[in-house]
Amino acid sequence: MNFFKQRLRRFGEVKAGLFLVAFGVILGILFARVFKGFYWGNIHILDSSYLYQIKTTPIDYSVLLKYVYWDIFKNFILFWMVCATSFGIPFIALCLTYIGFQGSFFITVILMKYKLKGILLIIGYTFPQYLIYIPVIFISIRMAFWMNKNLHYDITGKKGRREKISRYLAMALLLGVVLAVGGLSEAYIGSFILRKILHFF
Image 1 (cartoon, rainbow, N blue to C red):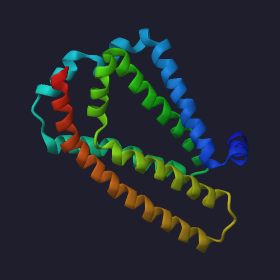
Image 2 (image 1 turned 60 degrees about the horizontal axis):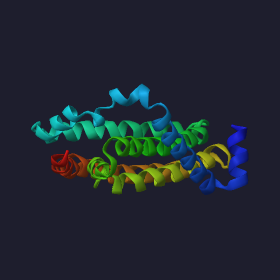
Image 3 (image 1 turned 60 degrees about the vertical axis):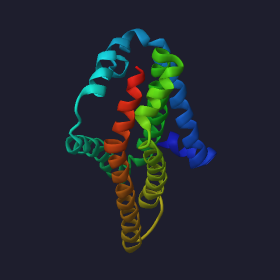
Image 4 (image 1 turned 180 degrees about the vertical axis):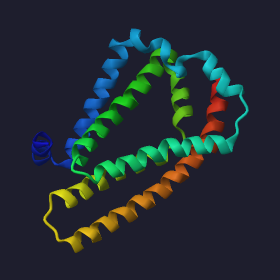
């Protein structure tokens, strides 16, 4: 905990956050290249039969939407719950590192497999929903950081703390609504675009 406090005091939350994302990006690229032999045969997005199945299988959009909502909201709710505890700031640091790692690993693996054509696949897996998800993720992280700081490091009375909690809760609910729109775009628009792009593979 003291390590994170020292880094925050030295760099500020924005620079520290960018450093953690960049650190995760470097780790993701290195891991994708160095440990290729361990994971290469176990990733579905590299399997042509899996891509063919996505392209040809009829989609039940209501089932897909339920799956998308379960996937995004379980993580969203867990994130805010943990960030309300005293472990919030280390957890946020871990999330930022993981975001960088996951994104760079995903992009590196696809480009290693499909070269420049992989850019189409990256677009298919991320557009348009990530135009919504990415701002929600980083706004959530910023708000959760200030919520944790206000709850656990600032000296306030019970009344002031309740007011702050209610404000952050309202913001989280608003972000949840925006996230729901992103889920709709992923289930209906994103899946359509992905299937069209997969005709090139």
